[in-house]
Length: 446
Ligand SMILES: Cc1ncc(COP(=O)(O)O)c(C=O)c1O
Image (tube, rainbow, N blue to C red; front, side, top):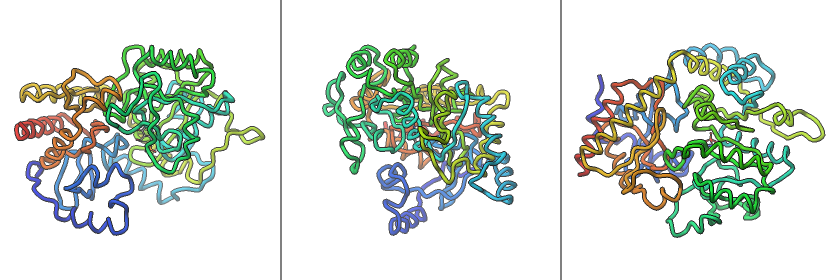
């Protein structure tokens, strides 16, 4: 059925990579795909179908990265292929009102409990930009609170302490050091940002006592997905919501990773939360670029044209072809049994991996559940926050582990701060193949 245990070399990937580097920085269009993570054995992918991808050398892999979670239906899902083929022949985009965007929005509202209205954009980053602008306009305040280790896209004010750093650089819990993720951002931008550690209610209470009245919003990922996969402590998210409201700030839930993944209505439904605004992307588009902000009319109506409007333009907003894909994707995800299946497949992978590490006596944590999880090599029982990650996680060992898995036909990013993704295309046999490969790699590493 496949040659997944026989991947030895990737000469054509190497050639393409060298060629790409002549025109593209590090041979790619995002540093998360670049030499930094795949060096010294670049992989250039050519095609995908279902849960599998093939590189330019013809090597086959089972894909557990799934376009950083965007390809929730796997690759080239027949229904998505059909919709795209039909729709493109009618014109991909008009930048005008279309039935397609209404049909997508209606399905979105049926699935996401807090969505009285939705505004579509093109990426999760754009959705994050818009949510913050709306919150600032609505509250009349400019500062906002973000958590260490959370990533909300590459908009200037969010680019703070979202990469890992040596633990001794992080500063006191009550006043974490602000570590910019990028050059080129005026430092004044970060004067508007209050930084806090995540998953720690008493520390957050203290920080809010000092800054709460200045805040337009508190923004959080529901499951911390950019330091691997770190679930919230019991009741934590509700407490953040309550505290934000106590100080008159909006609660923005960044569901770009978790939306349409954990439940039809994302983590807000899974955990029974009410968000004032929530942002979406990734799985919403089933591999097509899309972002969205959802919330109550009282806030989203600020987008209406007029004197005190909140500006949000975009030639490609509500892109017709993408909206067709979104509607078809949401129909597929709404089918009976989809989410129980996603959870069962992911839970089997998590349990199986734990078993492999236990048998092979490798100290590893497999954290997360259902459709998303991560492996940490660490002398701990759990990773609860960014600081745990910076302090305890052996990311170089993880990178070695994944590079060996790649040689055994399992496709994943070697970056420990990302996460394993289960799509609707994964089946039990894919999990079994993963466990066999993991077992072999553990033996090689021992
Ligand atoms: C939680 C979260 N928010 C926002 C974004 C930004 O989304 P995009 O890459 O589509 O701009 C990401 C991307 O990884 C993310 O993980």
